[in-house]
Image 1 (cartoon, one colour):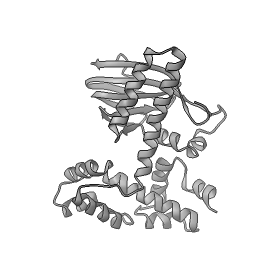
Image 2 (spheres, helix red, strand yellow):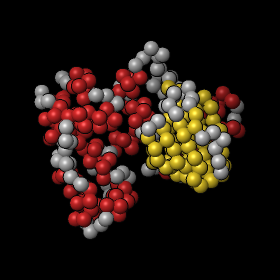
Image 3 (cartoon, one colour):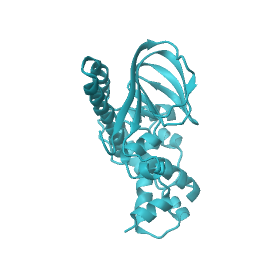
Image 4 (cartoon, helix red, strand yellow):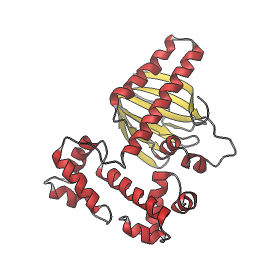
Length: 271
């Protein structure tokens, strides 16, 4: 795969692994742990969490990746490189202009909502051992590329009202849209629906594929983009209209979500 694609540089399948030989390491390539079953705890740089079946942990080059097996884990270890990234390029600039790599750079932990497609890609990556080496490499590149496309698609869906058969959560979506322009606490929303915050977040994720915070953040950042493109308002003024306490905090969230600072976004996309 050329240009904005990915190239697999290493692959290994592990079944019911009980412990990692290395508790942490750094690599020159990108690293993906794609889990079929079991669970692990991880730290990618300063970000920490736990991952299980149907999920992946991604670590950029040169970043410390710490991991520990919580339950015997079956997973695919994939190292890969980004094609079309010159050594002299500023990585933030490159990622800001490429949705796929912006997602990879900002999401070290991905929960795949289309689990059937996720596991199908993993199965094909494993079965690539049955074909010639050059064919296996292309096969795995395609499968890894499709996993990346899935990640981008999930990010794009967050700015769209999700379809849900849960009528209570459809009301919750409407409620969150009405509250997104000002600060609020999730416990207050949960109580309106007769639930604890934990119950509300779990039910909302089951119905929509994302957490309430992820949904509201996508709405807020989309509005911020529009205001940056169409007005000359200050970042603090935009933050106030998007539910954030300050321009500084909005800038941090914006950079994490879009891979570019608000000032750079305004300069690039204002017509």
